[in-house]
Image (cartoon, rainbow, N blue to C red):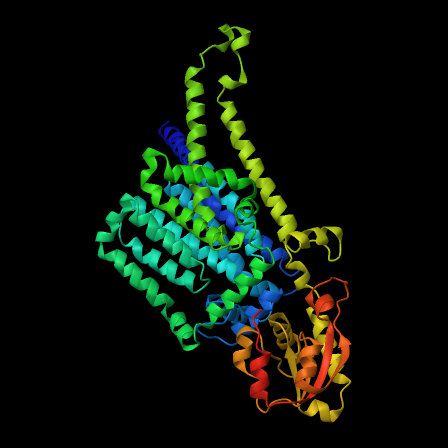
Length: 540
């Protein structure tokens, strides 16, 4: 009998343990699973097309590590160098860190919802809201991905600071801002939002702590190498950013900044609005008011300065987290209120009073509707932002209109082979002192990626940071040129003729196949190379 009673006790204990929620069923675990699923999705689809033009720029810069580049700070090239060391020139491997940091951003979004007081539902909703942008930004190795994670990390650190009151979190805030400035200079707008959020709310009490000033010093120390590089290069990035801004304004790409926020957030836009209200207007949540400033200040500055709509995308995860918690609280309160009003025996009520509105199931239906909207967002993003459409299909054309990067991922090997065919047609004397001059960063990146196996010389370019790497010693005497106009080349060389055209076997119209397809062979430079090199310089 004693043994039998002991067995029953053990069974009861096992049942109790099985009924206790474990980490594997927690909100954090499920958000981690969502984040991991995005990485797997990127790995599964990442090899469908080819390197994007911007990725080829990052790859070329990764082979020439520096504390700065004309077109962006050094963090993207740094991760590109690590990817090259680990995975070589594998397309999926080169994109791995972009996918990974986007997944980390999703995890931090879910953790912010938890810090706001959200349960499992809020954490999952917040993470799902961030998935569509994660799919787009994690699909390419680009500075947008690293800029995004830095904004989200700063927001998470601010949430921990405001909730715990532990001033040591200022070090995390400072490190995140410094790293963000090493990824993309728009972090400066978010940093101003942090400053406003602290100065104009009760959070200014944190300024009395020495940790806040240590955080400032840390952000400066992290960013200082790039700042010194800019000083040594006459702040060339300011000239580049001015060129870029004028180009975007002239092309009308900044005209729809405010409506563009709907495209950035899709069906999660109401969730973001709820997040602003949660942080700004609810009296019981006034400790979160700095986060509202961290969104509103960059919003106002980017609108006034006519920035691109996606520049503000990294500010939304903290709003998704806050909005999800607010919705969870509302739905739970509604369900609890309705449940308290329901009689023990509803059969005794008149039929007219037995309505769905008097049931807590309505809040469950609302929660399922929110999930359905977010899943629809994810499906749309996957269809249009991931490289999964067959090249040349109507699906591909639709996706290319939404995301114009896809045509720029097609045809780079054929492009390089076209250059090699022109080289093969030259005389031995012309090939003896041959150079290749490329007009944009995608072309120089592709030539130096695929050209070595075809025996092509290292390509040079006057674009962005490639210009600083020079034209080689000794300078070439015969030059194969792509991406420059015939008018410019005939002014600079005594002999210049069209020797071929670039193409791709899919017939996809991109810059190489339709805008600048002519391949020139030029010789007899009219002035010394140093003078020509000054005129060959360009931003792109």
